[in-house]
Length: 84
Image: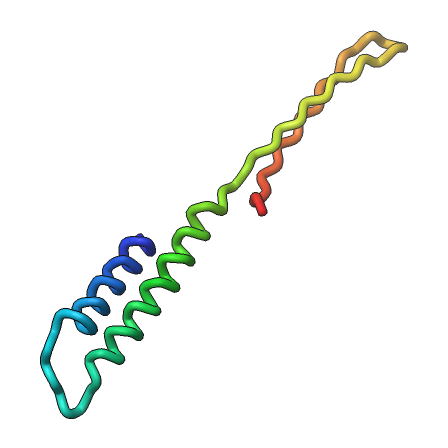
C-alpha cells in the first residue's frame, strides 16, 4: 500500500509541476508539486525497504541418546528473527 501511495504522490506532484499552467496568487503550485514528488519518493523507498525486510525462520533439531538407559531425547527450537 505504501508503494502505491508513493507512486500516487509522485504522479500528482508531476501533474502540478509540469502539466498545469495555472497561476494562483496565494500558493506556488510548482513548489507544491516538487514537495509532493519528494514525499512520494520517500514513501516509496520506505515501502520497498519494508517489503525487502523479511522474517526468516530458523529451526534446530537435536537428538541425543542417553548411554545408560538407551532413551533417545529430541530437542527442537524455533526462532524467528529479522533479516538484516
